[in-house]
Length: 166
Image 1 (cartoon, rainbow, N blue to C red):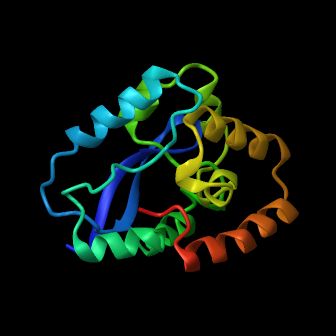
Image 2 (image 1 turned 45 degrees about the vertical axis):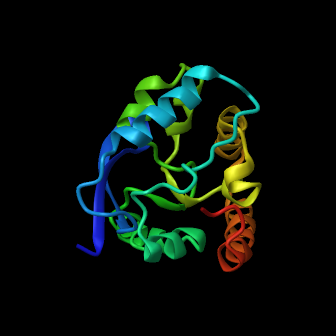
Image 3 (image 1 turned 90 degrees about the vertical axis):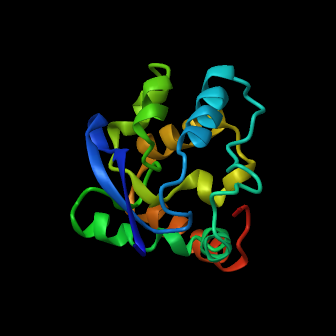
């Protein structure tokens, strides 16, 4: 199937079906990613970057292109239309990620999750996990239409240039 559906954690910790274009082989082993993410969060290393797994064998050649330019994210507009996501906000996490969060990390779910946000335009894969959370909390505390417009405008060159995409 071209569309991929995955459970993510939304506002106030409520799960929802999250849509993307498929970028991985069908029936791939999600345990690889789960182990990677749990180690990233558990280690608490403020310098550990939130990167995708390099040369992930589960990603298809077309999927690499879609991911680099964030084109795999376009079906999330369905989530926006359903009121499950906003254009701007913290990225929705996976349930197993949420289970690893410290109390202060869970503050990220106070807002509607978004398709783009501060950390995506401020380094994307070159930002540490804790810095990502701090940026999301800054956004939640300061969100307003002007900030959203600035972040949307900064997202366009990030997508076009594939900056930080893997």
